[in-house]
Length: 225
Image (cartoon, rainbow, N blue to C red; front, top):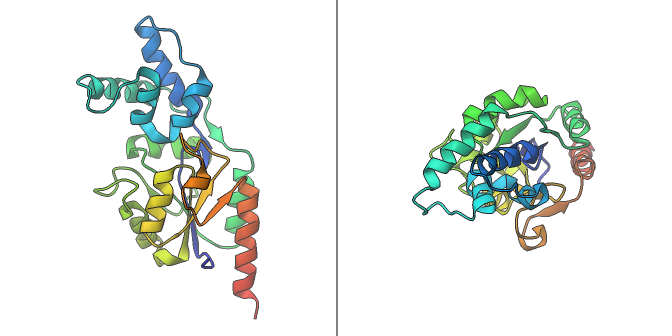
Protein backbone atom coordinates (compact mmCIF):
# COMPACT_ATOMS: atom_id res chain seq x y z
CA UNK A 1 0.00 0.00 0.00
CA UNK A 2 1.67 3.17 -1.23
CA UNK A 3 1.36 6.32 0.84
CA UNK A 4 -1.10 8.39 -1.19
CA UNK A 5 -0.11 11.67 -2.77
CA UNK A 6 -3.57 12.09 -4.29
CA UNK A 7 -6.98 10.54 -3.74
CA UNK A 8 -9.27 9.96 -6.70
CA UNK A 9 -12.96 9.14 -6.48
CA UNK A 10 -15.73 7.81 -8.64
CA UNK A 11 -18.76 10.12 -8.45
CA UNK A 12 -22.08 8.25 -8.55
CA UNK A 13 -22.34 5.86 -5.63
CA UNK A 14 -19.00 6.86 -4.12
CA UNK A 15 -19.06 10.58 -3.37
CA UNK A 16 -22.69 11.27 -4.16
CA UNK A 17 -25.98 9.47 -3.81
CA UNK A 18 -27.38 10.35 -7.23
CA UNK A 19 -29.60 7.27 -7.55
CA UNK A 20 -32.88 9.05 -6.68
CA UNK A 21 -32.65 11.38 -9.68
CA UNK A 22 -31.36 8.66 -12.01
CA UNK A 23 -34.19 6.34 -10.98
CA UNK A 24 -36.69 9.16 -11.45
CA UNK A 25 -35.51 9.60 -15.04
CA UNK A 26 -36.28 5.93 -15.71
CA UNK A 27 -39.66 5.99 -14.02
CA UNK A 28 -40.65 9.11 -15.93
CA UNK A 29 -40.12 7.11 -19.10
CA UNK A 30 -42.26 4.30 -17.73
CA UNK A 31 -45.09 6.60 -16.67
CA UNK A 32 -45.13 8.20 -20.12
CA UNK A 33 -45.63 4.69 -21.49
CA UNK A 34 -48.47 3.98 -19.04
CA UNK A 35 -46.28 1.49 -17.17
CA UNK A 36 -46.08 1.21 -13.40
CA UNK A 37 -43.00 2.59 -11.69
CA UNK A 38 -40.13 0.27 -10.82
CA UNK A 39 -39.48 0.36 -7.04
CA UNK A 40 -36.59 2.66 -6.22
CA UNK A 41 -34.71 -0.05 -4.33
CA UNK A 42 -34.78 -2.23 -7.44
CA UNK A 43 -33.14 0.52 -9.52
CA UNK A 44 -30.66 1.84 -6.95
CA UNK A 45 -28.00 -0.88 -7.32
CA UNK A 46 -27.66 -0.05 -11.02
CA UNK A 47 -27.12 3.68 -10.63
CA UNK A 48 -23.34 3.42 -11.08
CA UNK A 49 -23.84 1.62 -14.40
CA UNK A 50 -25.43 4.67 -16.04
CA UNK A 51 -27.97 4.44 -18.85
CA UNK A 52 -26.98 0.90 -19.73
CA UNK A 53 -27.61 -0.41 -16.24
CA UNK A 54 -30.70 1.64 -15.47
CA UNK A 55 -32.44 0.99 -18.76
CA UNK A 56 -31.64 -2.67 -18.33
CA UNK A 57 -33.20 -2.66 -14.88
CA UNK A 58 -36.13 -0.48 -15.85
CA UNK A 59 -37.03 -1.98 -19.23
CA UNK A 60 -35.02 -5.21 -19.52
CA UNK A 61 -33.36 -3.74 -22.61
CA UNK A 62 -29.74 -4.09 -23.72
CA UNK A 63 -27.56 -1.92 -25.98
CA UNK A 64 -28.06 -4.29 -28.90
CA UNK A 65 -31.84 -3.70 -28.87
CA UNK A 66 -33.01 -1.59 -31.85
CA UNK A 67 -34.79 0.88 -29.53
CA UNK A 68 -31.93 1.22 -27.07
CA UNK A 69 -30.27 4.33 -28.50
CA UNK A 70 -33.53 6.27 -28.73
CA UNK A 71 -34.39 5.32 -25.17
CA UNK A 72 -30.90 6.20 -23.97
CA UNK A 73 -31.23 9.70 -25.42
CA UNK A 74 -34.66 10.08 -23.79
CA UNK A 75 -33.34 8.87 -20.42
CA UNK A 76 -30.39 11.28 -20.50
CA UNK A 77 -32.64 14.21 -21.41
CA UNK A 78 -34.92 13.38 -18.47
CA UNK A 79 -31.96 13.20 -16.15
CA UNK A 80 -30.37 16.42 -17.41
CA UNK A 81 -33.60 18.34 -16.82
CA UNK A 82 -33.74 17.27 -13.13
CA UNK A 83 -30.14 16.46 -12.28
CA UNK A 84 -29.98 17.46 -8.63
CA UNK A 85 -33.51 17.37 -7.21
CA UNK A 86 -32.79 14.69 -4.62
CA UNK A 87 -29.09 13.94 -5.16
CA UNK A 88 -26.74 14.68 -2.27
CA UNK A 89 -23.36 13.71 -0.90
CA UNK A 90 -23.23 10.54 1.13
CA UNK A 91 -23.03 10.97 4.90
CA UNK A 92 -19.51 11.90 6.09
CA UNK A 93 -18.21 12.71 2.59
CA UNK A 94 -17.81 16.42 3.44
CA UNK A 95 -15.76 15.48 6.50
CA UNK A 96 -13.69 13.06 4.43
CA UNK A 97 -12.88 15.68 1.81
CA UNK A 98 -12.14 18.30 4.45
CA UNK A 99 -9.77 15.86 6.16
CA UNK A 100 -7.97 15.16 2.88
CA UNK A 101 -7.58 18.87 2.25
CA UNK A 102 -6.23 19.40 5.77
CA UNK A 103 -3.50 16.89 4.92
CA UNK A 104 -2.73 19.04 1.86
CA UNK A 105 -3.47 16.15 -0.46
CA UNK A 106 -5.23 16.84 -3.75
CA UNK A 107 -8.40 14.93 -4.50
CA UNK A 108 -10.17 14.52 -7.78
CA UNK A 109 -13.09 12.89 -9.56
CA UNK A 110 -12.93 10.22 -12.26
CA UNK A 111 -16.39 9.25 -13.46
CA UNK A 112 -17.97 7.66 -16.50
CA UNK A 113 -20.69 10.32 -16.35
CA UNK A 114 -20.46 12.55 -19.43
CA UNK A 115 -19.05 16.05 -18.99
CA UNK A 116 -22.43 17.62 -19.85
CA UNK A 117 -23.70 16.19 -16.55
CA UNK A 118 -20.54 16.28 -14.42
CA UNK A 119 -19.81 19.97 -14.94
CA UNK A 120 -23.16 21.35 -13.71
CA UNK A 121 -23.60 18.70 -11.03
CA UNK A 122 -20.34 19.25 -9.13
CA UNK A 123 -21.08 22.74 -7.78
CA UNK A 124 -24.66 21.76 -6.98
CA UNK A 125 -23.28 19.01 -4.74
CA UNK A 126 -20.47 21.09 -3.24
CA UNK A 127 -17.69 19.31 -5.12
CA UNK A 128 -16.23 22.37 -6.83
CA UNK A 129 -12.92 22.02 -4.96
CA UNK A 130 -11.90 18.91 -6.90
CA UNK A 131 -8.34 19.33 -8.16
CA UNK A 132 -9.28 17.50 -11.34
CA UNK A 133 -12.48 16.23 -12.90
CA UNK A 134 -12.32 13.50 -15.52
CA UNK A 135 -15.58 12.58 -17.20
CA UNK A 136 -16.52 9.60 -19.30
CA UNK A 137 -15.83 11.53 -22.49
CA UNK A 138 -12.64 13.32 -21.39
CA UNK A 139 -10.44 10.57 -22.85
CA UNK A 140 -11.08 8.23 -25.78
CA UNK A 141 -11.83 5.40 -23.34
CA UNK A 142 -14.04 5.15 -20.25
CA UNK A 143 -13.56 2.89 -17.24
CA UNK A 144 -12.69 0.04 -16.89
CA UNK A 145 -9.97 1.28 -19.25
CA UNK A 146 -7.19 2.95 -17.23
CA UNK A 147 -6.98 6.00 -19.52
CA UNK A 148 -9.25 8.29 -17.41
CA UNK A 149 -7.29 7.53 -14.25
CA UNK A 150 -3.95 8.04 -15.98
CA UNK A 151 -5.22 11.39 -17.27
CA UNK A 152 -6.21 12.39 -13.73
CA UNK A 153 -2.73 11.53 -12.45
CA UNK A 154 -1.19 13.51 -15.31
CA UNK A 155 -3.31 16.58 -14.53
CA UNK A 156 -2.35 16.34 -10.85
CA UNK A 157 1.32 15.79 -11.74
CA UNK A 158 1.37 12.69 -9.54
CA UNK A 159 2.64 9.24 -10.47
CA UNK A 160 -0.25 6.78 -10.88
CA UNK A 161 1.26 4.43 -8.29
CA UNK A 162 1.07 7.28 -5.76
CA UNK A 163 -2.70 7.65 -6.25
CA UNK A 164 -5.52 5.85 -4.48
CA UNK A 165 -8.72 5.31 -6.40
CA UNK A 166 -12.04 4.76 -4.63
CA UNK A 167 -15.13 3.42 -6.40
CA UNK A 168 -18.29 1.41 -5.85
CA UNK A 169 -18.31 -0.64 -9.05
CA UNK A 170 -16.23 -3.54 -10.34
CA UNK A 171 -15.09 -1.50 -13.32
CA UNK A 172 -13.67 1.11 -10.92
CA UNK A 173 -11.45 -1.52 -9.34
CA UNK A 174 -10.42 -2.91 -12.72
CA UNK A 175 -9.55 0.57 -13.98
CA UNK A 176 -7.62 1.47 -10.85
CA UNK A 177 -5.57 -1.71 -10.88
CA UNK A 178 -4.89 -1.38 -14.61
CA UNK A 179 -3.57 2.12 -13.92
CA UNK A 180 -1.31 0.82 -11.14
CA UNK A 181 -3.24 2.57 -8.38
CA UNK A 182 -4.18 1.30 -4.94
CA UNK A 183 -7.85 0.54 -5.53
CA UNK A 184 -10.49 0.71 -2.82
CA UNK A 185 -14.04 -0.63 -3.00
CA UNK A 186 -16.53 1.80 -1.47
CA UNK A 187 -18.90 -0.66 0.17
CA UNK A 188 -21.13 2.23 1.27
CA UNK A 189 -22.10 2.77 -2.38
CA UNK A 190 -24.33 0.99 -4.88
CA UNK A 191 -21.96 -1.89 -5.74
CA UNK A 192 -24.10 -3.25 -8.58
CA UNK A 193 -25.06 -6.89 -8.87
CA UNK A 194 -21.94 -8.42 -7.30
CA UNK A 195 -20.46 -8.20 -3.83
CA UNK A 196 -17.22 -6.19 -3.46
CA UNK A 197 -15.63 -9.24 -1.84
CA UNK A 198 -15.44 -10.75 -5.34
CA UNK A 199 -13.72 -7.77 -6.98
CA UNK A 200 -10.15 -8.41 -5.77
CA UNK A 201 -9.88 -4.81 -4.60
CA UNK A 202 -6.82 -3.82 -2.59
CA UNK A 203 -9.15 -2.81 0.24
CA UNK A 204 -12.88 -2.79 0.99
CA UNK A 205 -14.11 -0.03 3.28
CA UNK A 206 -17.55 0.35 4.79
CA UNK A 207 -17.62 4.10 5.39
CA UNK A 208 -15.97 7.35 4.26
CA UNK A 209 -14.59 7.92 7.75
CA UNK A 210 -12.89 4.53 7.64
CA UNK A 211 -11.16 5.75 4.48
CA UNK A 212 -10.12 8.97 6.20
CA UNK A 213 -8.58 6.98 9.06
CA UNK A 214 -6.58 4.92 6.59
CA UNK A 215 -5.35 7.99 4.72
CA UNK A 216 -4.33 9.69 7.95
CA UNK A 217 -2.50 6.58 9.15
CA UNK A 218 -0.47 6.28 5.94
CA UNK A 219 0.18 10.01 5.81
CA UNK A 220 1.52 10.01 9.38
CA UNK A 221 3.89 7.19 8.45
CA UNK A 222 5.26 9.25 5.57
CA UNK A 223 6.03 12.29 7.69
CA UNK A 224 7.37 10.38 10.72
CA UNK A 225 11.19 10.61 10.76
